[in-house]
Length: 186
Length: 186
DNA sequence: GGGTGCTTTTAGCAATTGCTAAAAAATCAA
DNA sequence: TTGATTTTTTAGCAATTGCTAAAAGCACCC
Image (cartoon, rainbow over all chains, first blue to last red; front, top):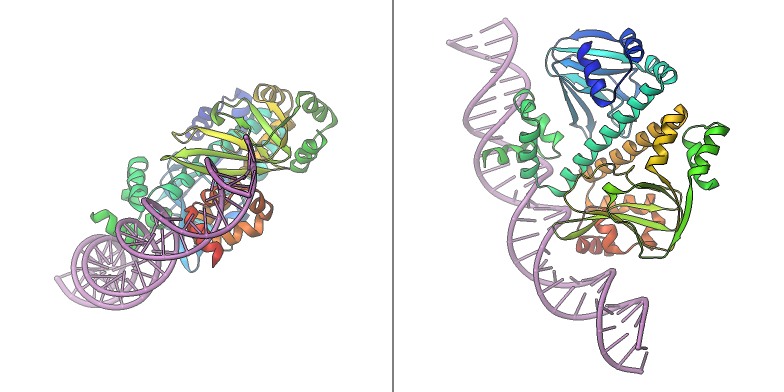
């Protein structure tokens, strides 16, 4: 649980009582590789912190499996990153490795928001961080060539490189799998 | 001022005292067409609500002027939409028409956040809405062709079509000005 | 009313990337 | 180890879009 609390404290300082209240709501769970952690993201009742392992958020678009987020250890996943169902297709989260998550339900989170002003602030900060990430993604799709996007990915998420298949990475980077293979060779 | 408060109340309900506190901080101002409302977005001390008129957030990328947001009447602009300086270039906001804005300083906003839990919540909600908008933008860049993006723009922001030049719209849609002209003709 | 400057359109060419299909390589299970 | 399945690479072709440059259209100002 401490990992998650550290993660949160790193975003905004929390009082002892807020920490205790949060800790009471957390549930740890382990799942094996290939498990579907979240079937339908838009209806998911939990927010997860990945303590160990790797999760992958994805959906289907015109029959193709598109990855829109990788969540390795130390990151969060759930309807915070993709808060609303913006696509027709079903959004789900699958585990690429044996994974340990720490979950908190939205009902509990809402209670915490109501009770602690500082946790509401924490939620705001996390949303702002997400905005930052999305803006980076926009910049990357809009201005970088496929080759540059891959170079950037290698630099910023080298660990994922070894842990996810080329096809998953290609769709995450918004390019054809064949294109990524070509780029890799060059 | 009422327009802005209505806008806020539409996002999350506010108590009378919160409304009053906000109202005390607001400053209305009018600027003529072509005025630079914000010189450097990342250093901007104000959040603006556009009551009347049209603003355009933009920056330079490889010597080209890129539009990344249009803010017509009824929308907000300032470092909420683009909260951090994610690009080398200078981000600014310029007015495309004579415009009336209602501003609130970040110092005042911070005070309001500290004092009113419910305003903190409001901030969180606005951030979440922004996430939604950015996700739409990502989907649009990543999956739609230039032609489809333009079609979508016509459908969702028809008023801007008449009010911003083709070059501005092209860069907003992430395509060459020449390409947009071709698309328009077809 | 004519000139000046800005915006939009047109044309031709080049580069990137997508798509399909097939071969090669790697992984996994029996 | 062998066979089956999945993943990655390779090849060739097509389509979209970008770029440059020049022409046409429009608006504004003296």
